[in-house]
Amino acid sequence: MNLLVVGGGGREHALCWKLAQSPRLTRLVAAPGNPGMARHAACVAVSVDDHDGVVRLAERERADLVVVGPEVPLVAGLADRLRDKGFAVFGPGARAAAIEGSKAFSKDLMARHGIPTARFDTFDDPARARRFCRELGTPLVIKTDGLAAGKGAMICRTLPEADDAIAACMERRDFGVAGARVIVEEFLHGDEVSFFALVSGRRAVPLAAAEDHKAVFDGDRGPNTGGMGAFTPVFGFDAAMRERVMTTIVEPTIAALADEGAPYSGVLFVQLMLTADGPKIVEFNCRFGDPECQAILAPMDADLLPLLDAVARGAPLPAPEPATRAAVCVVVASGGYPGRYPTGVPIDGIDEAERVPGVVVFHAGTALRDGRSVTAGGRVLGVTATADGVPAAIEAAYAAAARIRFDGMHYRRDIGRRKAAQEAS
Image: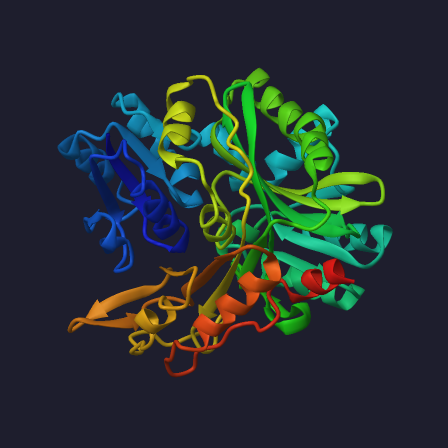
């Protein structure tokens, strides 16, 4: 099969790395790709926002399957454009991708169909939003309605923090048009889990679960980021909980979308809070998580290509066997991230890091300059280790991360450690 993967981040590097292992693969092309992806795919400098360019590339490459990685082109309708041209596409159309593109749409869908989530309301007036905050009480969460690169959810532990978050969204417009409307919702208590299911219309099969670390600093301190690390399996998320999530959340959600004329095709990323009252939705995403994708694909034994192809073609979906090994991904970030950060900083030690047994380094924000790897983003690398258990994977990932060097680099030192300690006790 000829494959085209759209995207150029750590998630797409992980997808290319895994798809390149399939015996069914003939040719793999990435648009635009990155230096790490170039080890597995032919990279073509076509932006994910250039829908005409992506369609032309798919036509030129005679792609049998197009995998759209990031959420922005999905929400903007790239999958629809490709399907209209006759291509098999892994990724939802724009109407279904609104489940991530508009949190108001997503929350209203859940409310209409009785899908468990936090108490909420939606506002386009800051004064009304502030009044609801006082009715709800703290802690609470303020979310931008639109896409904000994983940074649009603000946990507010006091009313002044909530007032400032509303001002950031609706008055200062720190998030642009994404924050013109906000969702104010209750803060859910429990363990957060990222759960992924493959969906084709009204059919769905569970894929894997991971736990992400959003805050930039150890101990979940500091502002939220796109994700500073992840691990799998998730302690306590057993087969019974997986089935409960499928029957009470995933299946009702995809049925609701289909009933409302927006059938879903792709991976459904369900951000869950395991509360005392059962699993509840934090939010939905219309693509693989980043860095969860790196963590769940690294130990996967199944061939990913026929799974994605079956989804794209509406064929019967085989449920892949759960991975038997653990994985941990540690994100190495640029100095200043998630705020302003420099680019073009030379990187050393990637090859050394990959000499640690079980480690692969996924490129997220890198470029080549005069034949040398340099930084090109906030999240630069995803150092991912696979081992027989989470503690061993943690140690391997950190042994590898310690071999990477560039000015200003930083990474969390506690990815997975708290849960590993709980499991050990």
